[in-house]
Picture 1 (cartoon, rainbow, N blue to C red):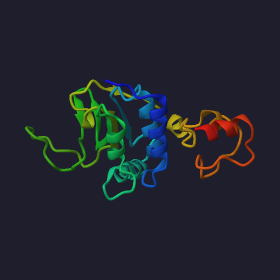
Picture 2 (cartoon, one colour; picture 1 turned 90 degrees about the vertical axis):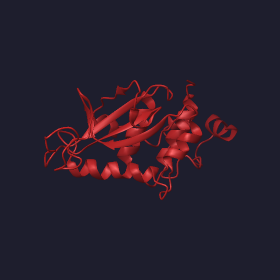
Picture 3 (tube, rainbow, N blue to C red; picture 1 turned 180 degrees about the vertical axis):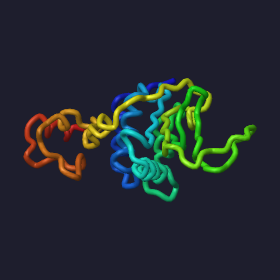
Picture 4 (cartoon, helix red, strand yellow; picture 1 turned 120 degrees about the horizontal axis):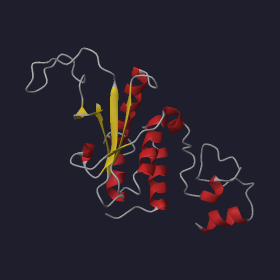
Length: 199
């Protein structure tokens, strides 16, 4: 399985950042999964659910923006970008639910419905939760999987204006503004300007 280069990962991060469909928080999750995937060679997943760190409406609203990023009616087309950029089949996917000791559970997705082969009824209430995968098969089916544990504050510390496309510039103290990195600030001179021009 061929590993993506650091520059390839940075390019995918940049495209994710420029998406008008996804929320900032969802983009930060996708960046983190890319970082943990070892160049899209390790299957990884992250679950965020209603509870101590996340409110129910927060989980619901942000998860829906991921769907917008993947929709053919959106403007991002994340799945198609990943198909074109990653030759080994790695892609993102999302589903309601979380992992338990018995495997993946979407308990509570359809309140009142009886699960197959049981007389038990789904509870009327369950924590709102979604899992996002970056795996070689959708939803991590039949894949060796690493569940990523990370605090919300750590995700929110991810700086989406620094995808590492221009490492020297991103590490500089010059303000980039909303249009980064389309234009180099006019007050950048010398080596930094030459680096940018030569790319």
